[in-house]
Length: 134
Image (cartoon, rainbow, N blue to C red; front, side, top):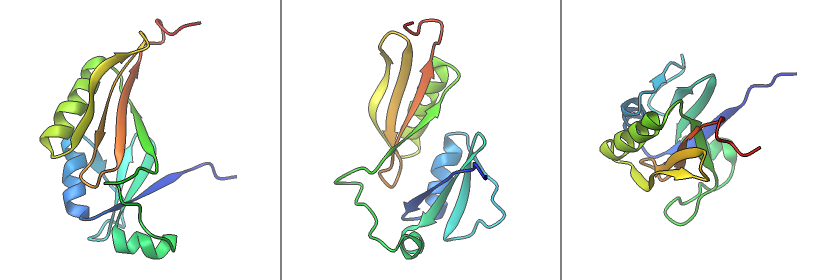
């Protein structure tokens, strides 16, 4: 049984979204990238960025208005507190909205949260497993 998963996100402008995520240090390497879709590689996962009207035809449903609601939050593991700080700094510099500044959480996690250019919500989280409650 195949165990791969792809997330498909609607975006208003594929090229602008690619530039946003490149500013966060990510690469695009899907052989099918074009003006209506691009494959964002995060670790071993792929997040497909689809131009809104293109994705709407696949989903056969309306696209969520991210200015009014959120369907999900995508979490990205960070390997250090400094990496979380870098996510927040780079997301803001690339035009994103850092709605939760980097902060300690429950004494063993450190994270931040931001919205990308299309209002999709992301968080970067570093977990210090040595401090994790037993």
